[in-house]
Length: 146
Image (cartoon, rainbow, N blue to C red):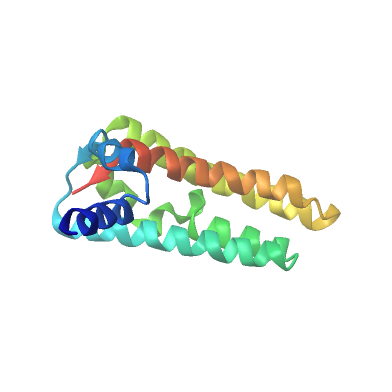
């Protein structure tokens, strides 16, 4: 019975995928001072919230609102408010590159969403949004923060 309970806990923690636990160990550990780590994780949580708000705006056909959220919260113009410059020295070059590409993808999405406001092209807007989340996935697959 004890083995069954432990097995169920393990499967729950790994999302039902026994390989997931070993996959996480392959990610490169990136160490930040504690305050920077908390700041970085807070930024990532806000990016996730912004993506949710973008999806909500798109679901109601509010392309301009989606564009504004993307640019202000995730796009290139948001970098100063994120304090990215002081964190960059702690990041491996690949992590920096993925992060920069994510911010660029958000700015590109903002333009795509504004264009989609004219013709209602949801596919184009969703494709642009996917390019943002692809960078999130790439970074989280390659790195872990401590």
